[in-house]
Image 1 (cartoon, helix red, strand yellow):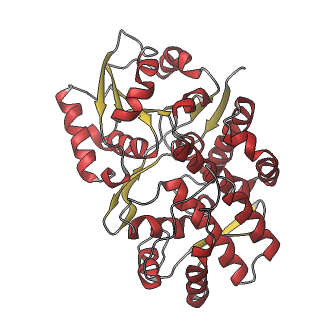
Image 2 (cartoon, one colour; image 1 turned 90 degrees about the horizontal axis):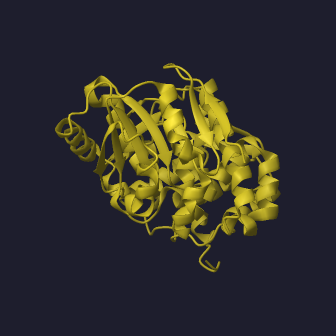
Image 3 (tube, helix red, strand yellow; image 1 turned 60 degrees about the vertical axis):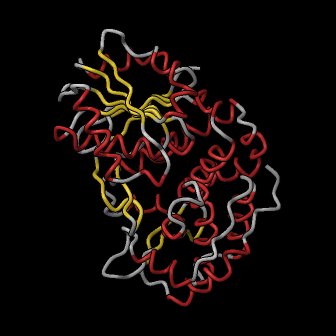
Length: 370
């Protein structure tokens, strides 16, 4: 099947997502389109590199001086210290302004490598090879890079678009089930905010998708990438439209930060966050109960989630106040009144949020089989 090419416009120029089974075999040709590089600096994690490293490495031009820099890709290591560590490794490998930084991994590796690329020598070229479903359909696209602080998620970072993204669904064969299911949450998010047809497809074909059926993934991954590309092209710096991509994320980020980034993978927190956001929309009479039921039913089908934490409601709300979408101290939520439509709301009554946080733990998925 011929790879699909999806264009993304940014302030730094246009870049391309090349998406399809086997696209890594085209790496040399695609990199040649970008120009000449003095070296290729690959950033990955030990577990990712063990799984896919040989297959990735052999597709890069042996004429380039290539060095692999490994980092811990746990969410708890997504911080400024890791950025400094990678930058120092680049100094030691003599990377210069004509070097190409290649991020091979999931969202944490992509965010760290992107921030490093934006910062090292005030900017070097960046290429993403996303190896998780979340990264393939969401985090590698759009140029948002960043790290966490103890006070909140992604509070330090930069907008720095890659020069190229090589997305190969075949690489997902080695992805653990838990990480794959987390990526499905981002697919559901895109379908809710922008694509009712895809929502219906997921309702009908979730069993096939969970089996990682090749035809299903070859349909869904480019479709999701195209949605993200369209949104970030229209609003690169999250000044308006792009906020819809944060559907469920105000709750999700609070869940992650109050559990110190140890309980949830990002997609799992987003899954909880979407169910809570759907209920909140109903609480303020923005959507119907039937719509909430459809969202909750589809999210539950992706599989078991770590349970809602035993964290006081006030702690969750305080964490939400540190969210980067907060304006003038007022909480902002991305809510969806109906399939294919979403927007930001900053006039949500606090008592409605409190009711949702009280009820949300009952959206249990522990009875679902893996």
